[in-house]
Amino acid sequence: MSETNALKGAGRDRRAKGSGTADLDAIAKAHAIYTPLSLPFYDIAVHGLSNRFAWKCPTPKLVELYRRHLSRNHLEAAVGTGLFLDRAGRAFDRLVLLDINTNCLETAAGRLGRFSPECRRTNLLSPEPLDLRPFDSVGLTYVLHCLPGYMSEKLVAVDHLRPSMADGATLFGATILGRDIRPNAPARALLRAYNRRGVFNNLEDDLGALREGLESRFAHVEIAQHGLVALFSAS
Ligand SMILES: C[S@@+](CC[C@H](N)C(=O)[O-])C[C@H]1O[C@@H](n2cnc3c(N)ncnc32)[C@H](O)[C@@H]1O
Image (cartoon, rainbow, N blue to C red; front, top):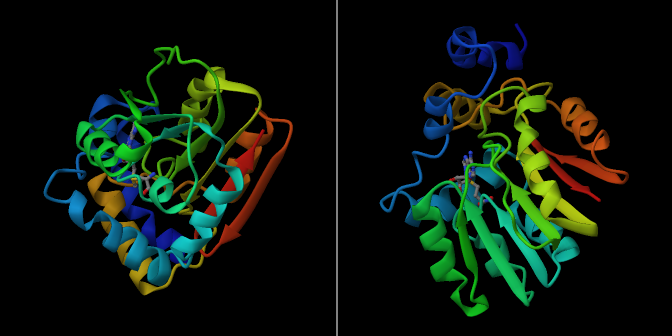
């Protein structure tokens, strides 16, 4: 059995239950882990340890992506703790932080207070329009692998962000792949545990589906894979 197939049992039960359409329970499970107790450990667990030792994409690679694509008029979707905006060394005329989880919004807004960010609590999978003045850049990092459903369903999130992109704006970010990958032992253990808990829903996510979904929406798409992580930009 391939390494990827061995992981599949973790996601099979959940997938068997439904039609593949994201249900509210799955959406809630994907962000329930971000609490006031866990968030102080998020940066060290994810960006300090997992990126380097499990996902094999060291955090400086992601910071570099932010430095390349951030504009002064930026929307950060699924902001988490706001680490990338904090570390990128850029300034903003307008910064909006979006997340479904108020703990994340509060944490990131506090950390990024020097940019006077505006916060928006939103479910990226909800069809409700964002109704925001257009941005020149939109960040979407480490959330696609959390969202329930197949890649085609997850990319509904991008459809909700697109009306908030100005002409020529760039959408960029990263996601951890769960299929057609060669995970090491720590990565396998984390993928299995996170998918069992519904924190990740990425066992069907591969590079091809991401590329196809982005190329069907944008004229210019760049994707690079580092370890298990796909880094993308699209405009
Ligand atoms: C793994 S964290 C990534 C945080 C940050 N982008 C980073 O890379 O450190 C996933 C983030 O996505 C948010 N999130 C999960 N599901 C969401 C949804 N349906 N809509 C909006 N945000 C969501 C979580 O609350 C959390 O902030």
